[in-house]
Structures are given as structure tokens and as C-alpha cells.
Length: 60
Image (cartoon, rainbow, N blue to C red):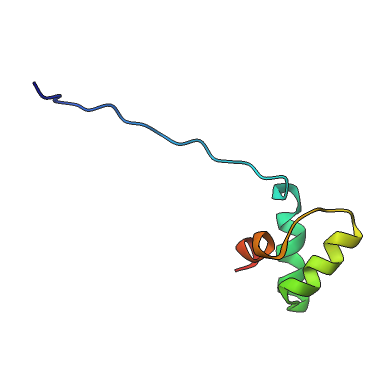
């Protein structure tokens, strides 16, 4: 017995605690060409908790 039209599944977009800061991060990189390490230092000063790998996922 086979299905003529198998069910279609859709994944929902995962949100991240860093999502609100992505425009700021990308803007700093575009304007000043800063490295991920420098951006990490900046956002840690602002109290944003993240790690270098998560930040690199946003940057690159």
C-alpha cells in the first residue's frame, strides 16, 4: 500500500538569544571591518552572552 501524496513537513525557524543583536553585529563588521574576536569583546562589554563559534556563525 503506497501513499499517492505523502505528508509534507515544515520545520519552524529556530530563534536565538542573539537574533536581536545580529543587525548590530553585521553593521559593525560592514562599517569597520572588525574581526569576530573584536566584536565578541564589544558585545561582552554590553552584557551579551555568546561564544566565539556562535558569533562566527553570524559573521561568516
